[in-house]
Length: 492
Image 1 (cartoon, rainbow, N blue to C red):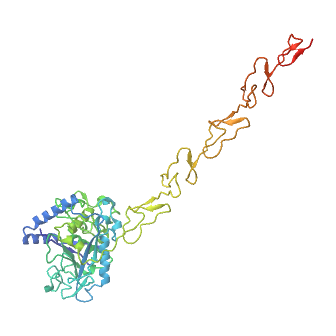
Image 2 (image 1 turned 120 degrees about the vertical axis):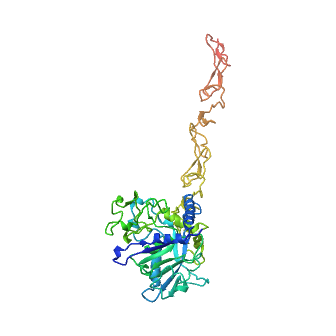
Image 3 (image 1 turned 45 degrees about the horizontal axis):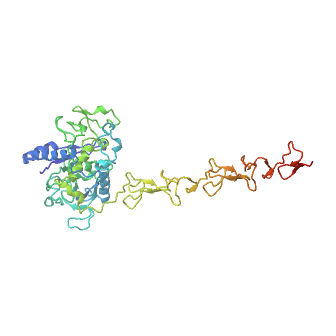
C-alpha cells in the first residue's frame, strides 16, 4: 500500500489574533485521484487496517513506551530574513514536544464537554528530538542549513529536491524531514500522510515565520506532524463523511468558517454553541482550523492512530523509534505505584520509615522483628512464637513460667517457688494442701493430734496423759485383797 496525500495549510499574516488555518486539501485530493486511480482504494484499505488494529489493540505498544522520533531540520534560506537560529528551532522543538505530551500552551483551556475523549500524556507519549548523526553516521547537530535562491518561493515542487534548489530528502526510515522556508500564496505548511512505502516528498514543510514564535507555540508543526503521523482533518466536505476516528465528531466545515474570532473559546461558552451535523464539534482540536487561542488538544483516538503508524510493521514510520539517529534515551524515572526503591534512573522513589523495608514492588512493608524474642508480636501483626503450657510472654517478649497456686496453699508453684508452708503438725499433701500429721510416737492410746486415736486400752486400763495405757485399781465393793493392779484394797 502507498498513500500520498499532501495537506496544505494557509494563513494570513494580519493581526495575530485573527490568524487561522486553511487548507487546499480537496484540490490536492482531486489532483491525486487523477494521477493515481488506485489511491482512494489504497487509502481506505490502509485506514481500515489501522482502525481494526486500534479497535483490537493490535500492534500498539504498551502505554508506558515512549516513542521517539529523530528530526533533521532543513533550513532553506537566503540570509537573515529567512534563516533560523538554533535557539528558535529548539524553542519550536520544545513547543512540539509540549503538544505531544498534552502540556501545550492552551491545553488548560480544553472543553470539559470532551474531557473523556481528550488525550493526556499517557495516551500520546511521542517525543521528537534533533538527529544526532548524519547520513554517513558522523556526529550531527540535527540542523541542515541550505543557502538557496528558492528560500522565499518554495513549494512542494522544489523544497524536496536539491536539483531544484531545495534538499533531497534524507532516509525516511531513519529521519523525520522537516523543512522551513517562506512559502508562497500565504501557505502555512504542508505534509503527507504515511503509507507502506516512502516517496521523495515524504516530509513536512512549514513557513519559517511560525518557528519558535510564542504566538503559534508550535501549533503549526504539531498540526503538520499530525498529518505526517496519519491524522486527517477533523472536518470533511459533508456530514456523511468523517475522518475515520471514532472520538472526533463529524463536521462539514472548518471551525473558523462559523466561529467569530471575537467569540469565546470553550469552556468559556455554552457547549452547544458550536454544533455541526447534529454534533457538538471539537473546535479546539489541533487538526481543526481555528484561531490560535482556541487550539488546545488532540483526542485519544488520534493518539492511537499516530502510535499505530509508529508501531505497525507495514507502516514506513515504524522504524523511526529505533533509528540510529536517536541519542541514548533520556532516562525516565518511573515511580508509578512505587513509594520507595530505585526509580530506574539512579534515583529513588522514596525511603521507608523505621521498621519498614522496600519490597520488590517498590512499596514499604513492615519488617517482622523477632531478634531476641521467642513470643509475642513481631511488630507487623504477626507473632514471634507461642509459649508452652504453664508459661506466658513477658514484656521482653520472652516466655516465662507462670506460678500456679490455684487451690494450693503449700508445696511447689511449678516455677521453682512455693505456694506456702504448713504450720507445725501439718504436712503438705500431693495436692498442695496442708493436712494434719498424726503423732503416735511413744503413744499407745489417746489422741493422735489430728482427731484420730493412737489406740485403745484393754478393759481395766485407761489412757494416761502420756498416751500410755495403765491399770486402773478396782476396789469397788472390796475392803481388802488385790486391787487388780498389783496393789491391795486393804487389810483385815
